[in-house]
Image (cartoon, rainbow, N blue to C red; front, side, top):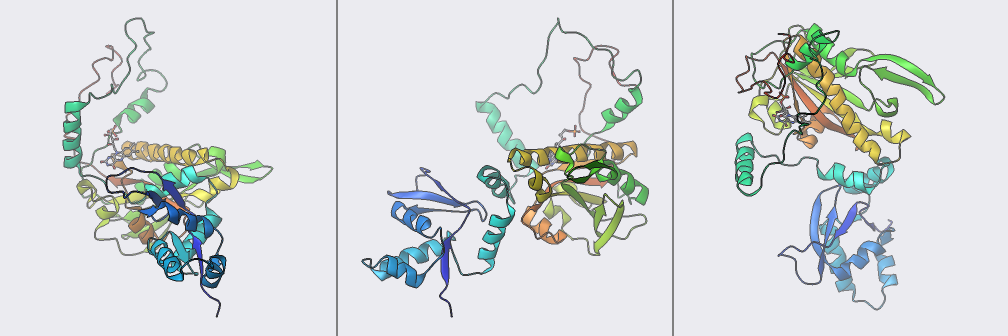
Length: 375
Ligand SMILES: Cc1cc2nc3c(=O)[nH]c(=O)nc-3n(C[C@H](O)[C@H](O)[C@H](O)COP(=O)(O)O)c2cc1C
């Protein structure tokens, strides 16, 4: 039998952090794929470099003839236990292999992408408390910039050719209430097509590219949508995949998770919504064309375009699509059957017919008379 080989995780970075618990002569090491962080002695950094190429134990001994094998074994076991050295071809090693093979962007995007998966979010009340205490020490930045008296006043956007369209867009509001509505297929059809329906293809030298109602960097169409349906007027509850190319829903699972809101960071208001549309990035579509990590930003921007169209379509039917980026990526991915490292839920929208909005909202006092809404 071949002796097992050790190698360094490909997703390590060394961070000279200066936390109080750091012992002298140690240095922070972070594995951004597994989010493991630990201090190791600076001498141990040698091993991380040494095992950049796979080595077996006999090879280690032969390369370090003057060293005490017990000390060697101790150091290596320590780094292995921390997850910084991978042994053999187990599940962890496979994950690292997949990362090396599949992640085509640079360290900066990978560090950001994997580090923010499955983060913890504070509750609404906690968030308000944190902000209130911040207000004591730190003035809030201005949330709008104004021009003043000498700026060119523009005519009302709510009159003229686009009056109706803008009036509709102005009605979009995040209303997190729930009336127990059963979503019709017409409602699902309209929201999903507005966001992700493929309307046409453009012929290019590199192949035909799908086009939709929302722009996509390089027409790479990196998003797929999954619908977790709680209440449908015609469709049975379950987990569905929406194909924008075929404009159809494929049922993947009949069970709707009891704790759907846990996938949405336990936000109370997301409990029992009629449906949740999950926007999943298929990163390799964009990676294939663009090697620059700025393309990662492009993918995130596209989620916003898609969501906005879904929200406007929902508004027009008296529904509300409430956006949330607070996701439990791991459990959600597992539930949707997403296995690839490059397939990630990025954004979600609940879909429901809301109750009248009780938020304290008032009209923008800076808008001149006559700029107000049509109705
Ligand atoms: C990218 C993004 C992420 C958001 N995530 C959340 C969220 O996790 N939870 C939530 O309650 N609202 C979320 N919202 C909704 C905002 O709170 C809401 O848009 C904002 O309060 C403005 O209200 P409006 O949508 O009615 O204009 C998110 C909005 C955006 C654009």
